[in-house]
Length: 288
Length: 328
Ligand code: SF4
Ligand code: SF4
Image (tube, rainbow over all chains, first blue to last red):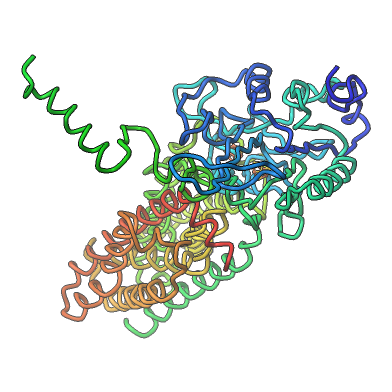
């Protein structure tokens, strides 16, 4: 039996969709073993096509980043730091203490509280579900590509030819189809260490805070939660525990939803429009 | 195999290199800094996604800008009884209003689902607002042009002609309102995104796109043979504003966050575009080389639209630009 067994929120049936309960993912790299079961489960369940195979750096990362055909992405960080109370020794040719750590984190769409992709979508293809997740309705999306530049986390992308269903925008669905039937998202279901935990958002937030404390006490001084509640994104439903700075994970330290830029941009647009009209009228009034 | 065959020489070289440097890097193997990667962020991967848009979108920015502002000129010309000029400008506006949606649809990943954009009206999405502005523009321009032509060609007489004149003036004014929004909203469209080099210049972008549209419309009309002082004045105005924006852009720098505007090929496109629409067009006008000024402005306006999309691709692919933008 793994973890809490069938008592775990990752394994038991639920009725969150019917009860309209906000749910989330808590992803914890301190227990992740980098097995990529989540990536595989996601691809298999959602029938996401193969989109190439390239290694990053010296690591075992062969997917690079989230995209139209990568909805879970296991990151392999190589850092010259200690991991908790890890004992370090000389590495390579020198005798100096040379700490090295490997951190695995399964990245996913953040299902933002204020989602840039959702606000930007001009077709209404992207919607908020009963459980608070952000869903792209593939049959509505016309592939305008505006969500792609409006996601502050670089998650959603337009799927290129010649892949199946090309031209539309794709990202993690939070396995909305499974959730409607009381099932747990595929990635959380298969995670052998419960590095990915699925459950009620409020429970998860409490669990995350507790886990950070636990880790700090056992020497992981740089453990922190990544959940930008202080910025205009106002928190994410799929949040992470990270060791070290968000930048190393390719996570923006202060993500902002682009709609906060609308006011100044529209003001400038209206001012320019009116100035142009006045210029045209003045030109004809004074120069003809 | 002799000892000085090329393959043996290569092995000798490798041995020398190994002795000298302590490491022999191979193709595709990342050894910079040993086992720890030294690229910014996560293996230098982009933090936000660069735009997927291709040539249709910058071209649409150009056509929509020129077409939209043509309607503004048409409205002013009609108000001051330059009916011929108003007709030419309305033809330009109509051409723009037909080409714009074609370009926009061509760029979609699924062109057949274009109509889904008309399902929703979403003030918080600049793309949605733009589509509605375009729809309203077409709705005003096409009947406006027809009414204007019927009036100008005196097809009807008496009260019917009076009615047509009034209808034309309303529709042309409507075209001007939606046209000026069509030319400027594109700056909002890319300014309100997660791409650092774009959102850091969200105030400049609508001014630039709108003014480039106005200048392009005037330049096109001048090239069509309408060499009048009013259009020349508008040409001066647009070139002067563009020159000021050139200065603004070179002063308002944000380091790594918007380096795509000042470095790389994208930076050159911006610079060339700004010089052609700004100082060069201004100088050519001062020397009364109006057609050259018009051509310079048009090329600059087109190049700079491509430049801004290129800037978005470079800036969006650059993780450091996102990290640097956090400090502003
Ligand atoms: S992370 Fe990006 S794609 Fe996911 S909900 Fe937020 S804005 Fe949308
Ligand atoms: S690409 Fe599709 S999902 Fe994204 S904004 Fe456009 S219509 Fe919406």
